[in-house]
Every structure is written in C-alpha cells, then in structure tokens.
Image 1 (cartoon, rainbow, N blue to C red):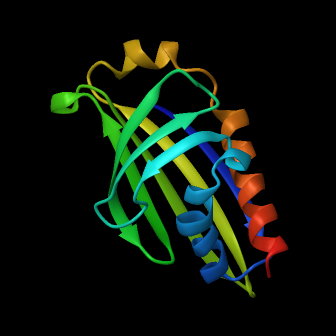
Image 2 (image 1 turned 180 degrees about the horizontal axis):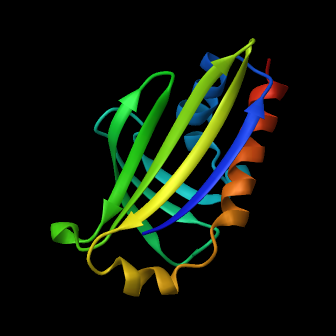
Length: 140
C-alpha cells in the first residue's frame, strides 16, 4: 500500500476552511495544483479531476463520505477493486484555527504494479495545502 500525506495548520475557523475546500476550490482549482475539476463536491457527488501531477489524465472520482465541516473522502479506481485510490480530507478545529490533513492511499491487488508509474505526489499535495491555507486566511 502506497500513500501520500500533507498536513497544515490554518489560522481560520473550520467553517471557513470547509467553505474554501467545498465551494471555492472547485470554482477556481488551479492554485490548488488542479488543472480542472468538473462535478459536484457534495455527498455522493461525482467528480472528474485533472491534476498538474499528470495533466493528460482525467481521474473519475466519487465523493463516498461527506461530513461537513470535518471531512470527506473521494475514491476512484479500477473495477472489482483491483486498484483503488482514496483521498481523505480531514479538518479539526483548535483554538479558533483548523488543522487540515489530506491523505491519499492506493490499494488493491494490482496496486503494486500501478503505483510504480505514479509520480511523487508530495509536491502536488504541498501546493494544495498551502493554497488552502492562503485562501482561507486571506478571506477572513
């Protein structure tokens, strides 16, 4: 199993961070390292995402968990669970601020073969978390 994680503390209330993550980011995803995002970031929503990490490839995802304002999970992959990618977003309030974590886990019987072709997502994850912090703190 391969995973990538980013965490950052954001000097904004959890509701503000959630608003950026679910409303503002989908309308203007490029500062977040996402070239294009189509669909609904909502409970049971379907999303198609083009990332700067692999610009030529579209990722079809489903929002499988949506718990405002504390988190959500996007999941996509191959039929029969042969390969699955799950991206979890977690927000935790503390002292008027928010701790944000995003983690992607790749799993399934053929994941060992596929993850070899996946680039290091750490830079893309860092871009995302820093853009979220900047946007949430700027619009207080």
